[in-house]
Image (cartoon, rainbow, N blue to C red; front, top):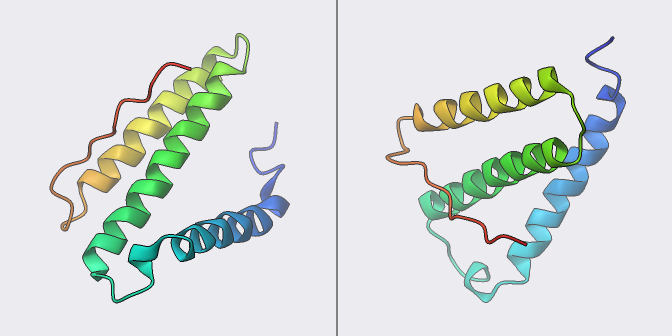
Length: 101
């Protein structure tokens, strides 16, 4: 099995997600004026880390029986959160508990 079967999609998907995020910022009045860069960095980091964790959870919820995948998803989530917590400008990482749908 190759781990990079979908690498050809990375640039396209990254571009799409970035454009969507920037367009979302433009739709909120508070971003139409000068914005504190540390708050914007915190928002950006939070949105993308939270989205990545949510995507991993969704993949896990919609995959049947792949034990190794589940283990790797949990390992990836823990590693991502640890990396974010280790950034010198981050004091605490916490997620708002999502409601059960």
